[in-house]
Structures are given as structure tokens and as C-alpha cells.
Length: 301
Image 1 (tube, rainbow, N blue to C red):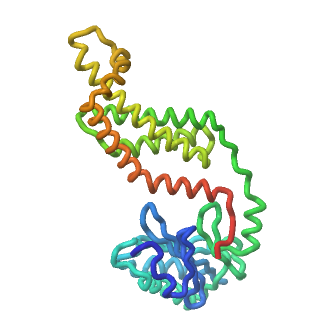
Image 2: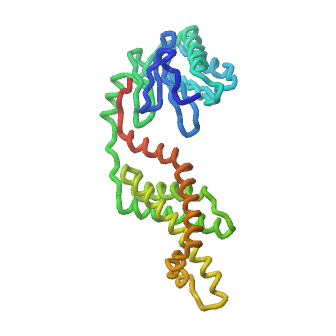
């Protein structure tokens, strides 16, 4: 099933910015969130019973999981169902899951409520620091007033951390290269380590940090390739001349003037950059989303 396709057919509103759709099924409000990285759907509604008997937990435990449902849980007034995004999945299958939950809620005396305060008041699809939720106006106002200030980023230390992290990627690239391979996964490792390094020493990742980590990853992948070339030069000439590794690195620019060597280097880098872009896309997109939604509490419907 393509992301959030067809929800309008069951009367839901789609919010592409937050990767979710929301609407009412048989008197109960639901929000369905698409989780890009695991490529799954999360179905949520919020209900409570005046006299809790454990009926909802029992229903979810014994429900027919079929081919789509990974797991289901009822906790803190929220029913959450995780659904596999398979080709056979469609909006009608999701609607059937929600209809069954609504029926079980109605039959067992569960009423709609705010997940956080438990009050039987109007609830709204909301984004709370990037997490899709169902909450009442009062709780949203309370969360906003209690929101701690966003921690300042130490930019210089963040850059240092990103550089240190990228060294791990360089080491992996060089090691695999010495084994006779050019592994594209190294580009992904380089990017992850650069981001983690920035976050660890800088305090947190911010918008500047995203771009800085990407630039450092790109530069350091080229540095790793130059080191590999220097190692090859040293191995080739050390049997004939008293040449150190630093001597070998100093003549790398001269060797790059040879079209055959330059072609091989560009081929390695092209492979590494393409795989870095493909493998890191979802990871970087999720970080960008976290950066953009950090500290943001708002209704989305």
C-alpha cells in the first residue's frame, strides 16, 4: 500500500506533512500514522471504561492478528495497533481493524477520552515534539506551558564531534579497501558517525548540524579514498625506496594527474556517494523531521 493512499475514501483527512490521516469510525476518533523507516502503520484511538475490567487488553490479546497486524496494546487510555505495510494491505483492511476496535470498545463500555487527562472532552490529532497523538485543548496548553527550553548547541564542539565521528567511517573504508573491496555501506556508516559525533559533543543536532554533518561526510569520504591511494603508493614503492607513508601521501596529487588512476578514484567515490545518498536518505530525513518538530506542540486537525 502506498503511503496514506485512499484514506479519503473512508472519510479521513490526510496530513502529508505529519505522515498521518485522522477521522471517525463508528463514533470513535482514530489517527493512523505512517512510519517511514520501518514502513509500517500505527493505528491509535483513546478510550477508557468507568469500571476497568481488562476487557480491552483481553480483546487485543485474543484478536485475530491476520497477515497485517504485528502487535496491539492498550496502555494509558490509548489503543495502539502496529500494522505491516504489505502489498496486499489497503485502506479497507485498515478500516476493518478500526471498526473491530470501535465495536469492542462500544460493547465493553469504553468511551472516547483524552489520552493524557482521561477527561471525556473533545480531542484532536496533534503533534507533540514530532509524535502524533490525540489530546484535548487543555492538555495541549499544559504541555506548551511546561515545555522546557531547547538546549543550545555548542557549534564548535559539534563540528569537532562530527569530524571525530567521521574518522570511524574513514577507518572502515580504508580497512575494507585493503581487503580488495569498495563497500557502499561505508558511506552510510560515515554519515551516521558524523551525525552522532555532532550530537554527542554539540549537545544536540540542529538545522546547521544537519548540513554540517552532510558536508563533513562528503569531504571525509574523499579523504578516505585519498588515504587508500596513499597506502597503495607506499606499498608499491617502499620495496625500492626509503619512502614513508607521509611521503606517499604528498605525491597523491601527482598520481591523480594520471587519467587511469583518476578514473579509478572517481569510480570508487561515485559508488560510495551514490550508496551514501541512497542508504542515508531515510536516516537523514528522520533527523530533519526531529529537528523541525523539536519543541513544537500543535493541533494538526
